[in-house]
Length: 367
Ligand code: NAD
Image (cartoon, rainbow, N blue to C red; front, side, top):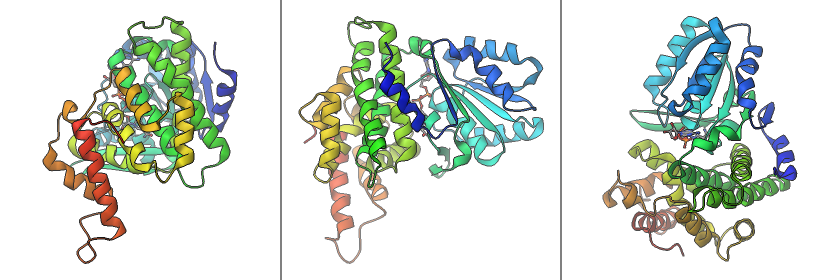
C-alpha cells in the first residue's frame, strides 16, 4: 500500500505536475502531445522499447525523431546531434522514458532550446526531479543548474521498474539515497526539505532490501516497487532543492573524468562521504540513523549498499588506480596544494578527502 503521507510530499517538487500511478505511463504520449502544437521527440532506454514503441505509435506523425540508446553522462557529441535534429524539426516537447541517461539527454536539449520535457523514470536516479544538467565533453563533465531543464510533467509508473535487475536497482537506489543525504546536511535546509529527505531514505531503504535481497518481493513485490519509486522521487526532490556537497563533487569527478559507472560509484562513495561529514553534521547523522534503523549512519549505509549488491570498493569497480586519487582529492577541494600555508584549512580538507578516497578505493569499513 502506498504511503499517503510520503505521496503528499511530492507537492514539494520543482516540477509542475507529478503523476504517481501504476499504468500511468500509457498516458505519457498524450501528456507530451498536449504540451505543444509542434512535434514530440522521444528518447528511451533500450529496456523500455515496448513502452516507447507504444508511445511512438500513438503519437504517429507528431514524432520528430526517436533516440533509442542514450549514453550515460550525456556526451556532448550526442547533445550537439540532438540539438541539430531538434533545430531542423522544430519539436516542442521531449518525452524521455528511461533512467537518468535518457532524461539527461532531454534536459540537455531543454537547456538551450525552448522545449518542454515529460519524464517517465524507470530507475531511481531522481534526475527527473532536479534542475541539474550534466554534459560530458573532452574536458570532463560540466554540470550546472537551470530552471529550463526541469521537466514539466513527471509520470511515475512503478510497473516499469519491475524489469530492473537487482544489479541495477540496488546501486540506483543507493544513488537516490545519496541525494537525500546531501540535503540533510545542507546549510539552512528548510524543515519540510529535511522531513522529505528523511522520508525518502526511510521509504526506499527497506524496499531496496526487499527487491534486491535473496527473497525478492517476499513481503509483496508491488508494494516494494511502489515504495522504492516513491522514496526515489522524494530523494530526487531533495537533490533538486539542496546544494551538492563533497559526495556529489567526488562522484561527478569519478564519473565525468574517469567514466566510472554513475550509480555504482555513488554506492561506494556514500558511506565514506557520510563518515567525512559526521563530525560537522550531527543532526543529519541522527536523521540517517533513524531512517535506516541503524546505529551508525556511515556503517548503516555501507551495510545497505552491500546488502543490495552494490560493489564494495572503487578497486572492485575498476577504471581508476590509486595514482589518480591525489588529483581527484585536489579537484574536489578546489585545486592544487596551497603553496605557502601547507596547513591551511583547504589543505587539511584535501588531506581528509584523500583519506576518504583511499578508504573507498580499498573498501575499508567507514569510521
Ligand atoms: P541509466 O539511465 O544509464 O540506466 C542504467 C541501466 O539500466 C541502463 O542499461 C538502462 O538501459 C537500464 N534500465 C533503465 N531502466 C530499466 C528498467 N526499468 N528495467 C531494466 N533496465 C533498465 O542510469 P541511471 O543510473 O538511471 O542514470 C545515470 C545518469 O543519470 C548519469 O548520467 C547521471 O549523471 C545522471 N543523473 C543526473 C541527475 C540530475 O539531477 N541531473 C541525477 C542523478 C543521475
